[in-house]
Image (cartoon, rainbow, N blue to C red; front, side, top):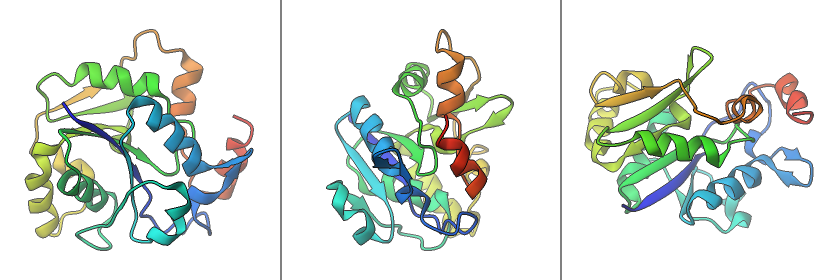
Length: 192
């Protein structure tokens, strides 16, 4: 099976006031941390963004949305449609501490499911999930019908929700599922 890691970086970062993906953490930007970790899972990593110029310095392929201004589901559709793989591993660009252990665990749960989505501390994390390319048509149909909520997709695919993470240490899970949408969360990220 061919696998690709996809960083969803198409948001407008309105609550942060600046592009979250480019914020510095230590000596790298947030998206550089994510890209490095995703590359450790598999070498094929792409960025979903409609503004290719701001990420060109990373040297990674950039794919644009087929459905403009339709949120993360459009980014998922772009990857599932445009990248020649069987499986896409997703990460949002505001989760700087994603961890390969979590993704390996999710991949191990995929079996014949269309998707595996983690549930951590009673919260679903669809943008940290793993999806098969074969659902691309279903995603397109949903977007074409004007429904952009990722969770609505789950009514139409064979999905497994994972809320047990084996022997992955709690501190790894806390960091993996941490996301930063505002300045206070960005300041917290500097200390995690």
